[in-house]
Length: 162
Image (cartoon, rainbow, N blue to C red; front, side, top):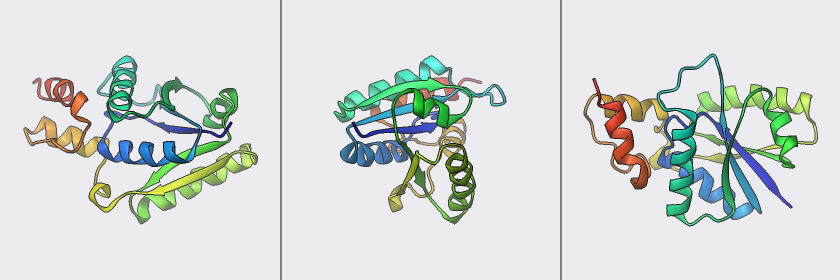
């Protein structure tokens, strides 16, 4: 079975993430959207909320071969633990490439049997990140078309609380 892991913080899930998910789900038998639990970061949404966002958006998009999960520690260890052989990543700009190249090289050193598969962001998502969504929303801007419709209300409620 061809399994890929799409790791990230997904704080919150964006339409850019969904684009990568749709495209990777079309190529793989199973995709696991893996939320990183990192004690160094302070996410705006809880792990349970981020998993719920993913599950709701995946259901809304009709992606039956996509599931959510979470991990801490080394990504390659998680990838092995779920029987995957691919790490899925998205690239928005040249700056992403430099960072991703460094991470991919280390992952390859740790686990040469696991490949990283990259998807270029569609032009309409090339500027989009979770931090941009949080900033726009917290300042009262519209996040319509930036996040999955099914998650928008909860994101707005949380981020506009003062």
